[in-house]
Image 1 (cartoon, rainbow, N blue to C red):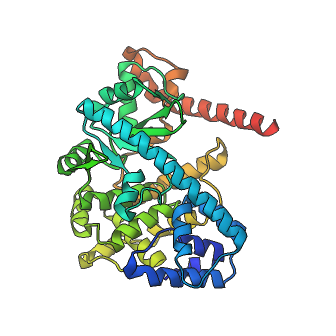
Image 2 (tube, rainbow, N blue to C red):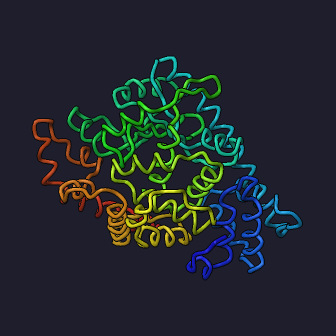
Image 3 (cartoon, rainbow, N blue to C red):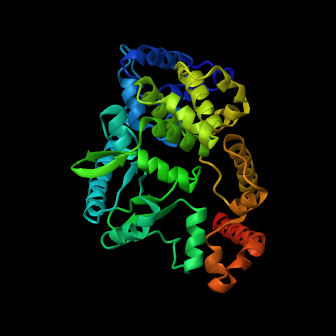
Length: 406
């Protein structure tokens, strides 16, 4: 099932984690079971496996896939740990569903269109079970023109803006909307986070509006929602994973399950990707599905694979093997990580101008608070961005040094 030489030569615990990162439908269950048995027969380090399950956020999925292999049991201590993780995942899923239903009702009453992204609604669509996907936050998208009203709906009760947000002038707010994609809210009682999106990073404003125009009205728990068409969902799942270098196996598991069930429209997604120049994003997702799960490649035009480069999947295959989370410290290592990630994004998505690339590299919302220029001098942020970026970096590095000493 797992065909890449790189993964075949890696630790059995990693191979087992990949094999259990989804719950295969009936037609592919034997293939998944064979991959699980093969990885276990190689003698995985179960402590490492549990750590990888935590890192890739697949506790309920991994436990469900392990539990259904006939005549196969894991060590009793591992069973207890996996069951505990799975139960915790399911309990959080129920909490998320209750919070989500409340938010959707509130937006419905205000007449604001809303499109849930991933989360428990995707879990139900893929598995008929809201508890199988682990999610630490909720993601909702609203049209940009309704963002202010949606914020008012959330802030009026139970939810408050994350502490990193602060009042901004009109020009600063416009710059924030152009450079970022979501605003974070925290639930006052549970501490859960909600990301309120108004666009996807890889889309132009025209493409976002077109995706909304194509969306399908639906209902969930008596609430009105919009759902993506299969072609848009195909591109969304591939783009979301590609944006994050596929460093979590659960994203590949989502794509694998949707593909194996025939829920994706690869042909239409390919045509849309050609129009938006995102074909390499789709090719990377397809190749990873084939190599890691043994799933067949969809029928695309013969010339499609002329655009494929091994570099498209070399970075994700390396990222999957990392034991820890991506670098999140202010250090030279973080700078190297951001530069490497930027190079990978340029490989996946249409080339940006050097000005746009520098803006993306140096932009930081904190600059508006560090140097609160009046709107009449907003233009001065551009030449000052490298200086402000360096100040942010030194400040964060100093804080981490103090934390390490303490």
